[in-house]
Length: 246
Image (cartoon, rainbow, N blue to C red; front, side, top):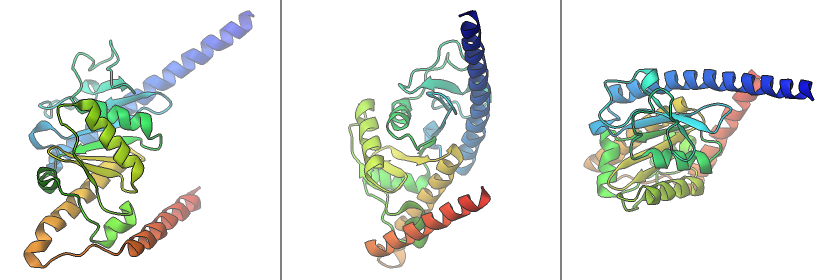
């Protein structure tokens, strides 16, 4: 009996140490990626945000709320559970997470494959959010990586739960890793936080193309059959490349 209890205590200790290490790594990652968002202009008026799951736990780390872009040290990032509640007593927990924490938490609860989330407020993405227009699939790069255009949802912005539900449902229903929220910006996901940031950059590029294209000539979306073929071929290449590295 004593040996069993000792074994359980050791297991709990090791699990706790692993979680602490994972949190520290995730804090550093979120701080670094947050600085990139600010540098790239994806955090308009302090609203851009990035979060990342903590490996081996039901936790995620999120950047401090709007207005704190000049204070992005890892220890200031906020550790939250999947309900969006900050873990009391952990560094950064004295700050309240931003209003978008409910969306990040809902995505992590509903979409197990998502390990990183970006709330983007880059310039041309905001144009689409302001007009309430989706981003059509106009180019091969978007077809390959996203498998289609970026949808837009129109929940009441003063209801955080409604926004979270609308975003999570749209992500679950579509092939694209992103969704626009009318009047707000875009939520972009990835298998890693780094991938979410890279996808946010592509969303901004495609938003810019869509905004500028009519000045030259009416733009036409790629045929859906072409989009499906391009996306399938791209995913097959990625899978094969991953298998070859193993």
